[in-house]
Amino acid sequence: MANTTQTPEGLFDIDGLLTDEEREIRSVIRKYVEKRIKPDVADWFEQGEIPAKELALELGDLGVLGMHLEGYGCAGVGAVAYGLACLELEAGDSGIRSLVSVQGSLAMKAIHAFGSEEQKQQWLPRMATGEVLGCFGLTEPDFGSNPAGMRTRAKRDGSDWVLDGTKMWITNGNIADVAVIWARTDEGIRGFIVPTNSPGFQANLVHRKLSLRASVTSEIVLDNVRLPSDAVLPGVSSLRGPLTCLNEARFGILFGALGAARDSLETAIRYGMERVQFDHPIAAYQLTQKKYADMTVEYGKGLLLALHLGRLKEAGTIRPEQVSIGKFNSVKQALAIARECRSILGANGVTLEYPVMRHMSNLESVYTYEGTHEMHTLVIGEALTGIQAYRV
Image 1 (cartoon, helix red, strand yellow):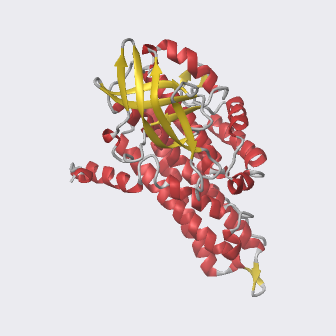
Image 2 (cartoon, helix red, strand yellow):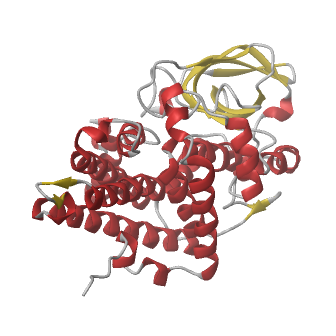
Image 3 (cartoon, helix red, strand yellow):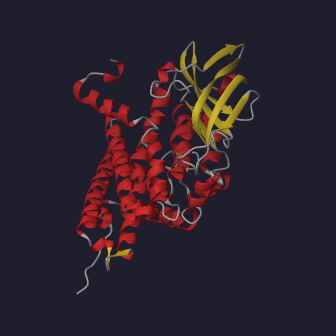
């Protein structure tokens, strides 16, 4: 009698925890990734190039750009549906999910949460369709985990603002039509909507990356960039602005990283069933099955935590330290899963014929960005002790 196999998600009955709408959204994105992303992403990764503008329009047609925002052409879906979309996109590649995260959870979120009605009407509908691509300028060459130390300045000059400074590790920087730039002013930290064709705005592509190669990463240099008075986001004048957006992006990541883990795990299971050594498929050996079991349990626990945090977000009760717990766990476990899957694939695991090493390499960046793993560790520690260890 043949045994009936189950998927990692099936073992946890994940579908029973989702609504019909959430399952439908997941299915649509999964099919898109299978047809459009997976056949070509290894080549994009190898070449370090991606048809980002073309993909943005397609993703806009799917309705995933800013899908968790309300109004202005955005779908306004729940947090879990957005998280599942991120998971499916990252099962294709972290770079694809990054494109969507930066567009929706950083650039669009900043305008949606802190912009004027005129700014929202001007930018958000076209960003939701992918006609206009955005980027988010917070991190600087010398200030990543400590954005309060930023050196980028904006000064008033009559009714105008003049920006000077440098931003680093900016996803979409070279392909963006508009940048949300955070700068120090006499009034506090302010956000500015900066068209990338503004005189003095320069984006320099970061070359020779070994991770997130299917993603555009840039340095942005602002040299006496002059903006009208209505370029400033009026709704915030402190670090609360960019940190709110970062928290939104981290939520997408805590789901997204699990997509890379699932794709690695499914690949390793298929490979183990097909690869024969000593007259048996390697999936038949106890050591391999232990690896499968350990990885599946960690993946399932991570997904259950992500779903729980999504429900908290939908209820409006989620706290920043809880998002840190999710990002901390998902990326740590996803990276461990990808590494273990690579061991099952043996030498084949280091080639682009299989997605595992690509996921593993990408996850090294995900481990660091939107708050390093160390910073999320200390956020959790602070929640438990009340002590800000990163300031000691």
